[in-house]
Image: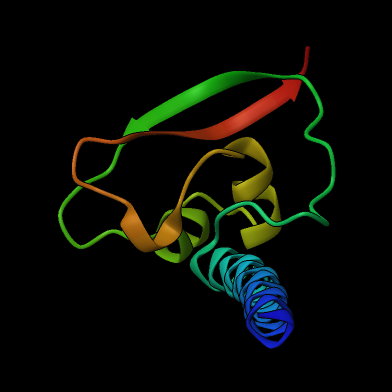
Length: 103
């Protein structure tokens, strides 16, 4: 009987380790995916309070890069004005800020 108890304890311990490793892998993959897709990652800077002075609705074929370039903005400024935007999922009619100032 003692062998069955030891085996059960060993199996339970291995399951705990497997679940812990799987959870850590999912977290790392999520952070990598977020940084690739333009979402939030753990190391992003805090967003300053801004007031948007000029908005535009996204048109067919526009991207974050084209919107920034057409407005004379750097990609960094465009993303700073639009901190919640996901450039991989931008859609027609989505409102974006093209000029902002400190609140």
